[in-house]
Length: 265
Length: 265
Image (cartoon, rainbow over all chains, first blue to last red; front, side, top):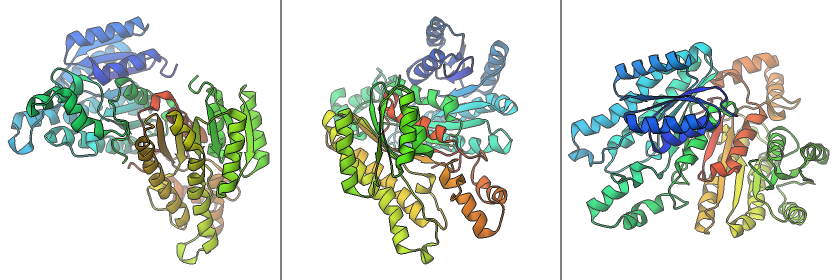
């Protein structure tokens, strides 16, 4: 197995990509701290992990709050002894044109994704540096490399996460920990609640524009991917697993697109 | 196994990265056309492929010659019936300052690295598009994204290969074959003959600059790499295997760095 007896913390693990990453890691032998702000979803995912014969620690956390992240780190270390892999994946979306956006909504997006990742890296990377062994995987997005109209806070956050990944990759080496890698994954439009859920982009745009979700897909989303399809969460999880494995020890500071050809840079 | 009963053509398969890819693919169940300009090396690698219980077709070819590539395609199809994966990996380099370079040598690099990939894509892509299933993996380089002084023909050819991968990824989708992906891998400095062989960069620079090989590594190469080490061919092969697998069905048009953090774009 690729992650035998590794310990991973996955944020945003209650559903979508985070859930798929948690299960993919558990299948390959890892124990998982299942973290998200939804206690019920955490428990469900933790149950699936235990069915795979691995340990799971469900933990309800708002990653934008440094105290909550610090307390999560304490409990994870208490339970598992150390953390080998951090998957900073928690994310939210607050659509709106920048000029008409609500300050608190706009900033909330930055707080959850950018500060959330910052807090988690600060809490879990020092142990990795000490042991000169670890993996940080940050969930950016194709929106980290392109324009996302009526969604500037999301694009700004996801761009920033690539900056964190690149910089932290360099810093861990400056600290002498060449065994720690830091990378970002940039998923394309994926089949998760953020896109296809009841409050997802498709439903929202359908309501805003007065057209059916099928029309939204045809007019706005289908053409965004060369493959003209949504990416499955399992495809993102496969890349996360690859980056977490020993095979990827030479990959650091990268932001890798899994997007069906939406962007190529 | 990840490539059960797939058929792969690997060019430049006689040694280094091409050999590592051939063996990694064979280990995962693929039959391999082992193609390079050196028949003895082809035979040796074919023997190693067969030792994994897979079929091998050693084939001597100069990929810069379209006639030879067409003949190889005919021979491969006759032996295996079809080709699922093309790894266009054959490459050469001819170091020189552009201003003082020998025209023939400069163009030879383009002919092998760029025309070679062009000929192979042309020869093998038709079948993949027809079956709406296939993988093209092109070995570019970090020199496809950055400067390589006294090696402009190499940098130009490797930049060209990224353009080829991106364009071809779009074209197969335009042709309706969304099941075919086309990607490039950009290895960093790798422990192969091009770097560490008797005619490799380290030996050449050591001779040119009157320094020891250790000094060349310490002063010129090591500072380029965040992890301060050369990549192993097996690390590049692991990425090729990932891109060739079903896990990577949503990755197309990308050029993925495996470089220990030498570049991050």
